[in-house]
Amino acid sequence: MSSIVIVGAQWGDEGKGKVVDLVTERAELVVRYAGGPNAGHTLVVGGEKLIVRLVPSGILQPHSVCAMAQGMVIDPAVLVGEIAALTQRGIKTSGRLFISDRAHIILPHHILIDGLREGSTGVQKLGTTKKGIGPCYEDKAARRGLRFADLADLGRARALVARSLEAWAPTISALGGAVPDVASVMESVETHAAQLLPLVTDTSILVDDAQRAGKRMVFEGAQGILLDLDHGTYPFVTSSSAVAGGACTGAGIGPTRLTRVVGITKAYATRVGEGPFPTELNDEVGERLRQRGVEFGSVTGRPRRTGWLDIPALRYAARVSGVDAWAITKLDVLTGLETIEVCTGYETPAGKTTELPAALEGARPVYTSLPGWTEEIGSARRLEELPKNARDFVRFIEEKTNAEAYLVSVGPGREETIAVRDVWG
Ligand code: IMP
Image 1 (cartoon, helix red, strand yellow):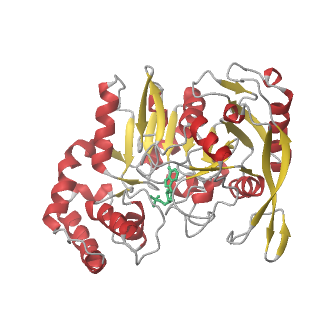
Image 2 (cartoon, rainbow, N blue to C red; image 1 turned 90 degrees about the horizontal axis):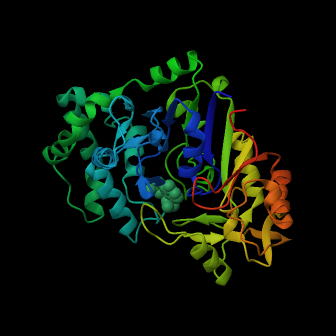
């Protein structure tokens, strides 16, 4: 296996930071292909937690080159802050961190609009991270976005910023905001341009060179498949391609070159922000999952909604992304539950189904009850060391989704992992 895509198979926050960190131990190139600072990947550096939102998690491996590809939207101020935080902790970024010249830049008014919309009563609230993701991708689709390549010509950059501001001005005013002027937006762009320009390159060449040289590559997804613009629980989704195929469009690698798709799923489910979540638990079991699983947003600090694992959703996610290997995270969080419910189908107004309906409103989950276990499992390093009911739970996921578990995480530490199979094998 030489090019692995790692995707979240739920609504984000599946534990990508830890899984990418483990998988990239043997990767020479790590590429993030979608999203922006709405993601929050928790890394542990020298025993200290560090949350990166833009820089690929592979940055912790000194031998890995990391690229932020053209499918991403990047806030220059956030990126400069992350580089400083990494440098402060002794992690070298120069010569090993690159930005695609085609990646789009999040501008201050994108963040302003995202916040105004979320705060407004007249607009459908999505519960976004308010990082400007949606408006930046909207500018990209409207073909007036500012890309890193444009920073080399500030006259051209200024014209694009002016077009964007002109297009957004009526919306900003209607939402009660003050329209910023071109000069102030340009000032913020120029503040970081000098520092970031040396990192800007055609990252598709890095990918192609690595592929030709037979190097190991990891394509790191952000958010989760159920938040994908095309395949997620629309309209409560993010604005980018979170599916594995997003690696092809977002990083410029041909579909035939990808050799494995690792899907990450928690042993239960969580969601932040608005949108349907049929297996949500608004009771003491949900609260228990939140507390034991420390389910609070790493970017926004919001408490995450918690619920039971949803097999139709997982099978759907595996199907639309070609998941052939699972990384099951947070299995230890389920310890102590007498019974574990798993959604295996839905009752919908149109009848019973075992598939994920496109419209989840009105869909009621049908559960299969599985017996829980009481033993703490954090020290297990082999599947055989898990209690039988925990092993059966893993087996149940594998059987219902037609994909095997490669990694099972039993605690937050990188050593608290059961490597069932070799993802590079
Ligand atoms: P946006 O990506 O900020 O536009 O937010 C759109 C939706 O995606 C909201 O429901 C967010 O809570 C959700 N979302 C975006 N990024 C993440 C993430 O990294 N983890 C979990 N949810 C996310």
